[in-house]
Length: 311
Image (cartoon, rainbow, N blue to C red; front, side, top):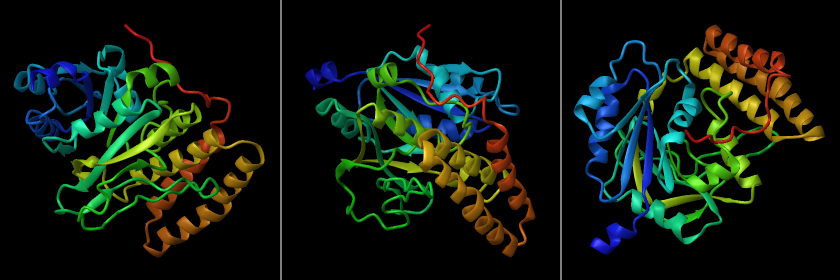
């Protein structure tokens, strides 16, 4: 046992809090019961306006609490911790999750055994719907429609996805990435703010020659509905802004033109009609705001990804 502890690489665990101190507490409590022996934990408070994140440091004195002076979004909040991380691997994990005791060992094992793997996500179940899968890998993106599908979504977990394999993209709710990959390829780009930044990051890592993996022997429970209000203008705006931005950053030439024509003139009207049938004019407005943002933000888009700078 001592040999196992000695040989276990350090994992830096990074989670972002925004007005969810109670939820973050529940995540940290679940982390205290894990069997993996070497972790350091970073909680980034994303300038919560009505939340006192200092409570977390009082209750969990071992955590590294980093307080941002503004809301940096998903990528920015996670990136803020990276210069301080000392781990061989970095686990980016949502604060609205709870983890199984042995969830981390299978993820680390994948990366330890194959250095051509650039990132790995575990199996994800819905926390509030017993044994129901949210994620067991992704299909590849259709680069015309900019759509992919979560494998296993909504299925009862009977062990059918307890496998280890390549996946079409990574799942941002929980992803383990080697620090050497972050230092070589770069961090998540912050222009997305919310949604699609992990897919953009996975695409960059894949283009750098690394594989994206799913580890079905690791399980994380996700309180999906806590993070955002579903079908809110906020969500519709950022999902569709991110979808179009992902297309712009990951296609070129004729393929980019074709994809944008599809998104603006086929997908856009179809989505608008669907919202109109539900009398959701607020969602129509949010969708076309996302389109307009992409049209008006041309020169300001940087197509690379930010490099990690150590403090």
